[in-house]
Image (tube, rainbow over the protein chains, first blue to last red):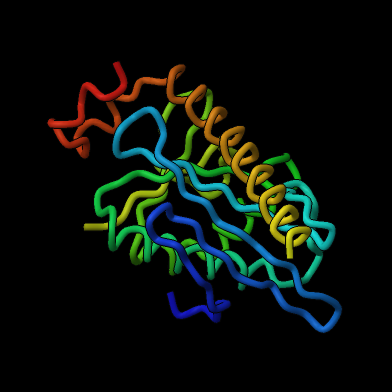
Length: 146
Length: 51
C-alpha cells in the first residue's frame, strides 16, 4: 500500500487501533477493533468514530473528505494484524447502506493496490464469492496473500 | 481526576458493547453460512472450538 495514510497507535494484545482523521475543518478520532468470531481463524473488523461528546458511532458520516486516506490507514492496520495472525479471514461491512456503498466504491477504486497484498471475497446471501467490482455484497471478506 | 476516570470508563463500556453488537452480527452471519469455505485455513487443533 503506497497510498498516504494516517499514523496509528495500537494495543496489539486485543487488536485495538486508533488514529485521527484530520482536515482543516476538524479532527475525528477513529477506532478499529478486530475481534475473534465464534469460528476460529475468522475475525470481525469494526471501524467507528469517537465523537466529541465521547459517544461512539459507526453511522455518523465524518464528511472529512479523506475516505481514501482513512481506508488506506485501515489496510495498513489490517497488514499489521496479519503479521500476528497470518492465514486469518477478516469480515467487515459498512454499518448502513450509504457507508457500505462508500466502502464498495473505495475498494473498487483501490482494488489493484489492495489485491497486491490481499484477496478480497464478497458475501452475498450468506454465500462466499470472489470479489467482483459491479456486485453489491453484504459483507467483505479479506484474506492475506501468502 | 475521578471524573476523568469515570468518563473514560463510560467510553470503554460503550465501546465494548458496541464492538460486541458488531461481533454478534458477524456471528449470526457465520451461523447461517457454510463455514467450510474457511476450513482450509483453520488450524485443525482449533476446529472444534465452535461446538
